[in-house]
Length: 263
Image (cartoon, rainbow, N blue to C red):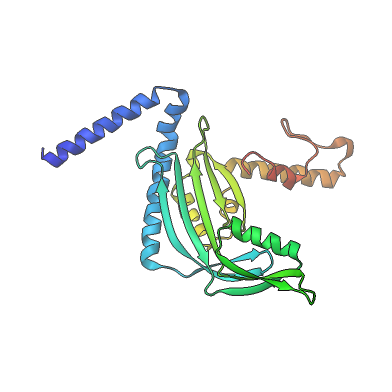
C-alpha cells in the first residue's frame, strides 16, 4: 500500500469512528448521520458543481424586482454565485449566495418626505449604495428627495438542519421577491430529480420549485378531497356530507391543501 493510500485509509477510519461515536450520543444524532448528513453532503456537492459550471458558462439570467419609490426594475443580471458550508464533512448549514444587478445607475424622485424616508430605509436595509439630494419647494421647505442608485439585490438560499429537527429547512431571501420564505423537506426528498429542479429554479427556468415538489401521499390526498368535494356538490352538501376519518372540517379543498404541514 502506498503512503497516500495508507493516509487515505486512516482518514476514512477516523472519520467513520467519529461518525459512529457521534451517532451513539442521541437518537437525533443517529438520524443525522444516517439520513440527514448524506443528503446534505449530496446537496453541497451539487451546489459546488453547479456554481463551478455557472462561473464557466455565465448564462444570461435576468430578474425583476419592485423597489419602493422606483417601481418595477426589470432585467437585473444574476451572477456572482458563491457556496459555503459550516463543515465539509458534517454540514448542518449550507448557503448559496448570488446577486442581481442593474446594468446602469438610475435616478428618481420621491415625494412627499414621508415616502422618501421609507425609500431611504428600504435601500439601507437591503445594502444598496445610493446618493441623494433634497427637493425643496418655493419656500425652501423639504418636499422630497432625489435618489441615485444602481439597484443590486443580494439573494441567499440557506439550507439548514435545526437542532433536534428531522427535516432539512430551506430559506430563500429576496429570490422571487424581497423577503424571506421558508420550506421544509424530509431527507428522502433530496434526490437527483429534486436537485435538478432546484438548479432550474435558481436559474429561473422554473417559476416555482415547490409546485413541482408534491409527494405521492399528497397527490393521493388531493384526489380523495376532489372526489369528496365533487360528491358534496352533486348531493348538495347538507346532512349527507361525506367526511373521511381524520379530515378536518371547515376548510375548502385548496384551503386544506395550502395549510397542510408540507406546504
